[in-house]
Image (cartoon, rainbow, N blue to C red; front, side, top):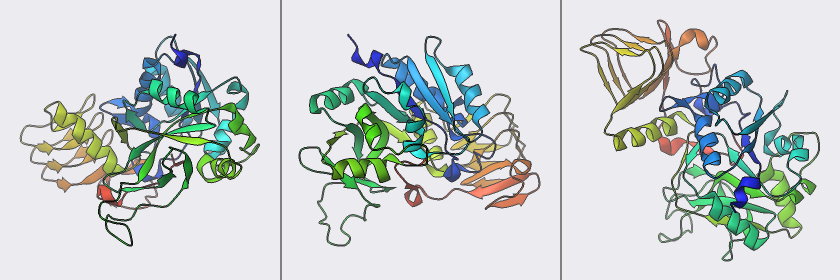
Length: 342
């Protein structure tokens, strides 16, 4: 018997997608396309591949864009419940809002912004064998990127959540030290976790519920893996992950439905959404281009995100040129992640 078939899953999809702006100016992050399909479609397929049929999706920012993506891409035999939050509640608050649906046994929580092949069956085995309150899937942060670190002892017990890792060799850390561990946003929880989640208010599990549980002697364990996992919460990660997948296919760019690249235009290492027009003589390199953008003839751009300016009437950064808003894409090493952030 596949024990995962009986588990419900919660997909976290309510956040603002601030670090992926301006791509999220008119849609929630789970509705942003990856390889021409909304991000949440990969989460739905991932969970269903392990036999999971009961899924809860929380909503807040541009909720209609997530609903539409789910309607178009959800497997036909999956039961989906949407939990709309009039005000965003954080991970803990999101779980509290649907605790009645998660009270009968272990349940899965997955961030709606990842693409992965992590084996959930092995995660459940760890959870049940250790009889843990929570089992968090962690990965070695070998590049020491700015993901919050998770502290774990030799038995796999989670001790706490720290700041960003130092560069290898900095401070008192030896050059051959093991890489820090990052949280993948995938976890299996026991309903006992609700004893540590406050009622009817904003809260995060990693900053409130888990530290309280650890302090009271509860067992939180790490399931450490090196299986494929991609997190797409920033412009740089979004672009670089696309390019990794495209190169594996022997491609250097992708265009969505209705996109036209005129003869004489040069487009490389770029992601173009739907109905984009790149005119003759224009050049794009390492760019992300949103729906309905026209790249004028003779224009040259490198490592920028380009969207229709009308969709960002009061841009927080970037430069409006003609009909377009141009936003630089910062290097991937400058990205940061709060483990509960969406």
